[in-house]
Length: 540
Ligand SMILES: *[C@@H]1O[C@H](CO)[C@@H](O)[C@H](O)[C@H]1NC(C)=O
Ligand SMILES: *[C@@H]1O[C@H](CO)[C@@H](O)[C@H](O)[C@H]1NC(C)=O
Ligand SMILES: *[C@@H]1O[C@H](CO)[C@@H](O)[C@H](O)[C@H]1NC(C)=O
Image (tube, rainbow, N blue to C red; front, side):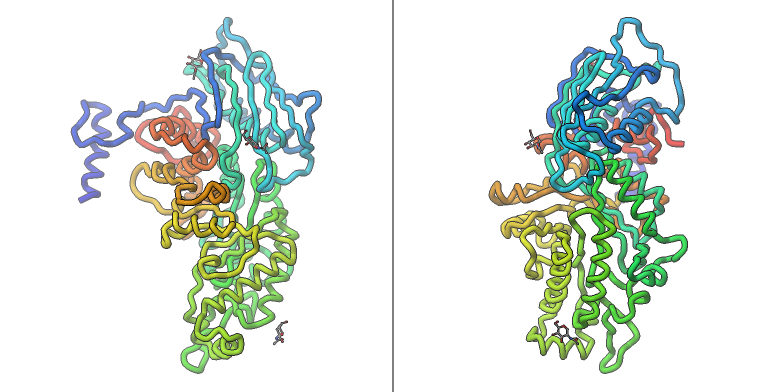
């Protein structure tokens, strides 16, 4: 029934383009202009922005970015100048000769001032992304502590520029004073359920930069496949990748992703999820998984890391040491979610080990023992960790600087956020941002209205919420549909995580979402449409 009325309603929307409105319509798309208007709206909405009615033109032949005389200089900013010049002037795209009105002043320079040294820098959780931007002709100014602030400011600058119908490029006189509300603004990609080719990982990193996301949570391996080519354990991918020649991230590929991310101010946090979610590790690392039994005989199946063997921890030490050497970020995600105890319960050696350790029949104690060992390994090799909420739910002692990722809805999210932060631990939220779940229609409003600090707790507890992540689990997603499924829906999450808490008016957000979607299409991303209508720049 619901489907039928939806179809009728959609049909009516189509009819309405030719006739008068029909009564069934509660469809929001209706009140929107059919053509998405480009007026230089910025998403995520800056903390403070003043736009005046005075407007300037820009021209490809005369505009340039420059450093201020006392500015630090570095590759990050140099490359951003090139990228944004191309994005603004659409160098690869269709060209239209602009007709510049004689009376309009021209913006010819954006002068950039970076206060801190930035050569070779990597972004971190502590990085400043603050910036101020002043657009006045003939020279605008962008000032930031760090190169990361410059990147965010250049994105804002590029979004302020729009084209009139005759192709004239316009930017209004504007001042912006901006900074992120949360320091951790992530996207999770799952490259195990399906392999995602580098090309699409990079497109997604571009989209993240356009929306001021700053963490790529790379859920790189899981039960289904192990595409990460390890140096210390090459058999993991040789025997665990879908195809060890084509469906593989080599060391070169990983370096490439990390560098591409760095230049966009994006941290790469890899996840090596254990003890569960490890089926693909079994073939390449014999003895790592627990043999499951039927009665007193092994049944040929394996499940989860074997927590009773010292070799398990030796393997993990070697692997995590390599991960530390390959991924520069201070954090690694150690997983720890969804451990099923049935196989451990079936194994008589584990039963004996449980007795020896005094765990009785409480298998969550065994899980705690495993996780505690892994967390200690991570600490000893110098990596802080992020874990899924179960680690804490199951009572594992974690280090004070642990970040806990809240993803379940039971216990209810506000309860869990309060529990995590009451322990003095930092939290990131993803429960309400599983963008892999889809339904018919325009669903970004529910992502937009999710508020990470919406729980009962002290200000100190609220301050321990450092952000959140939009997750794109890969069961039904690969390179063919990743970008369209994630964007622009994730833009709603971007605004929630960057903008002021009070920015929550849906009607205002709608016009920004529309323009942002259209902008992403113009920049060559196949971001999906939000409603019936059109964007001047169709994807080709
Ligand atoms: C930008 O300038 C144009 C041209 O003067 C003006 O029509 C428009 O209203 C301005 N935009 C804003 C948001 O003030
Ligand atoms: C960024 O700006 C905000 C608001 O002015 C301020 O609270 C914060 O301390 C600034 N961060 C840095 C790293 O300067
Ligand atoms: C495993 O390591 C523990 C702690 O180092 C040690 O006491 C135990 O004897 C080791 N077990 C085996 C089978 O080597």
